[in-house]
Length: 342
Image 1 (cartoon, rainbow, N blue to C red):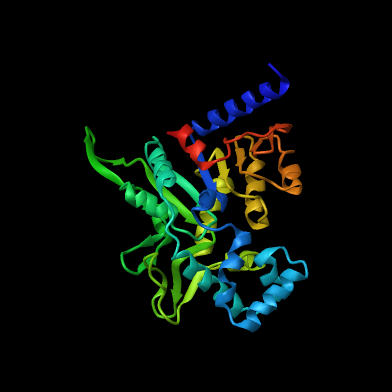
Image 2: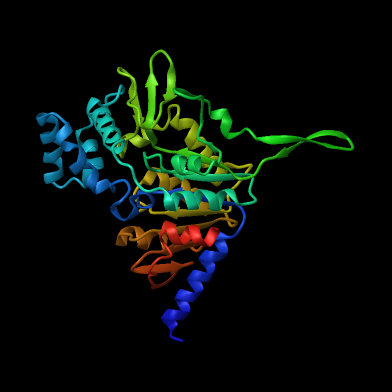
């Protein structure tokens, strides 16, 4: 057997071992929602889909930054952002049009339904998914399978934000010799949408709310989606993001409940706001990071492949605790990962 094949066997064995271990959490990026073009667009495609919704002067100002070398819509908005403490109206328009566009997309739920079912069969009391996308794939898939999801909101038509639900434990009453007890329920998915979602909005009168994913937010309300990048760090210091990010940091670094391994699927490692939290977790000796994505730029691959408690698998190359080798044809896909945790 060649050295290359030995390496691939080793990395596959280690990834599968981690996927079947306790203390497991997931972070899903755009690659997990793309679904080979049948799902939601990647970041580089969003501008092409929404630009005609903007007024010409707004469209031209963004396009000028892109033509001048801005790396995508994120950086173009940053370059146009003058730091107004009340926010940038153009950002809110962009967020609105992204939400409007996403509501027209009806992707297949097959893979995400299988993923939700696989998680729900776990013996864990809480299943943690950190979500970087605006789409409702996980929520819709879980609902189709009658699996409970906690996302920080409580209610029906215009659910209200209550971060205490992340700390609550669901259970059934039982009895032992010393009296009544509460038997905790397993298989409940907790989803932390770190950048907001379609359907999330803030109303001056009713506060932070969530409407149906297919509905438009009420007139006069502010969409709670953060068009990346520079504003992310500022915006996440206010509710609802501050509460959700506190949970992210608590589970990775602050405790008392820790995740021992984080599986990142379809995330290109380009958001420093996310990466700073992950760097903190990597300082723990009992933590393992798995980066599973189709591709990583050289700068990101070189940075994270040096970590002694990180595993990277892409289509072109991989890294096992600092040892570099061949890529894998499918171990980075949500479909394959779902099969392995089932």
